[in-house]
Image 1 (tube, rainbow, N blue to C red):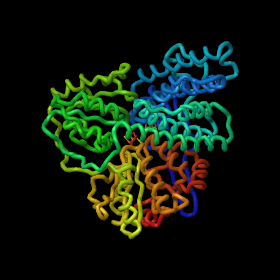
Image 2 (cartoon, rainbow, N blue to C red):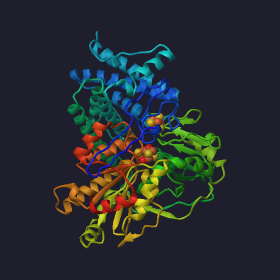
Image 3 (cartoon, rainbow, N blue to C red):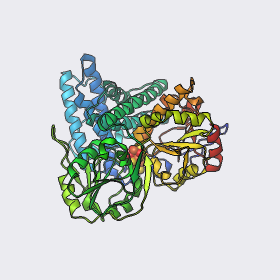
Image 4 (spheres, rainbow, N blue to C red):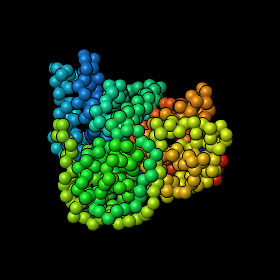
Length: 569
Ligand code: FSO
Ligand code: SF4
């Protein structure tokens, strides 16, 4: 059994198994729940089958090939946007809990190889001469595909530190790709983001120095900020600025549809199509923040939020009784009790589930099958009643800025604690609930992402009318928290974000959280506590770089952490 030990009081001790072995089956260590804290080698803890993990390895290889060719094409002129559009979708499909459907991953591979051929044609004769093999690899049989996947996966990079930096970059890219895809669906794109996807993916095929690789990781942080800002612009322009909202967590007696994931355009179209049908709509997990947007409030069949974060879906999807639409991750292994009423769309996929296809040009997605099914289902079973409050994205908090600043000046608010990120299954995540409970009453928790479900239903009170838990929205709305921090820095006339009374106690699970973390580092945030464990893909030397430059810490225990958090240590 591998141990990960890490103490930060003056000394770093970081021990873990370094001899990672690729078994015949698979190797994946991209998320926080990876087996034994080192890597899934037989089947994913998430439920991902080895064959899917292998196809995903081959897909990433194809994406690297497209990037290598795109770089060459760029030497002559522009690269058509369709290549980066494809890269975004394909990267997104490999994020933890997004797509478990091997056939779909193989379709992405086939599409990628076809696109690669087009790029080769643009480059002309001898296009791939001297280029990395990823630019030209092809396969003729399933065995071929499996063999290739075995030789190009994570562990094909022998040096542990190089592997660590490459994978850190790729996981950051996956998060960037996901957020950028959401912005793109709403018509918002940025060349800088697309260019970086190409540069970064291609870089992983090159022998770069450690300094060059570290620089790319930091650039990923900058691109992550750009991407989250773009998505924020897209969401708020389309749907208005999130505003303080009391969200109903009970149920009504009509049949309902439960929508989860992060895609607000799917949300919009589902609400439009269910309007006046007698079918209610509820959000689950990361779709909860849809309740905060003015554009969605006008629908009287939009009831509120049902249940908790993603990993509770087994019980909650069962008791919901009606159809469930997964617009993105996180999907957990689908149970027989609801498999016939669960649908995927976008990059989400699961074998055996019905998939709602992409929009035809100028048209909406067609959710009629889901609505028809909902009408035949019983109403959701009530699992709780009451309300939760959210909607504290940057515009709303800045509208309250005077009140917030006064509370800080008078000492009524001593500290803000950013507890954004992800939730997960592990018992150790109780830490975040206990921290929320143990923090003194003159502290305010700023949250975003599904991490919030560890404390958003606690009765933590308010400070002069300011709730002690301010939920900005989805994980990408961590950007809002950064905007708020930067505004406070300006108001208080500080030259460094770290001089603010703000501490960071972040929970991570999958690769979007990696993008968010890199964004915070890029913005100069130091002293972030991270948990419940450090990423398995960080080698001890890379951890050392993060500690030396950013004073990153692993969460310890509630009794010791809370006083340190309050002291800004
Ligand atoms: Fe959570 Fe899942 Fe939003 Fe993630 S539902 S874990 S970081 O996909 O994206 O916060
Ligand atoms: Fe394991 Fe996480 Fe990879 Fe799933 S995504 S196979 S749980 S490391």
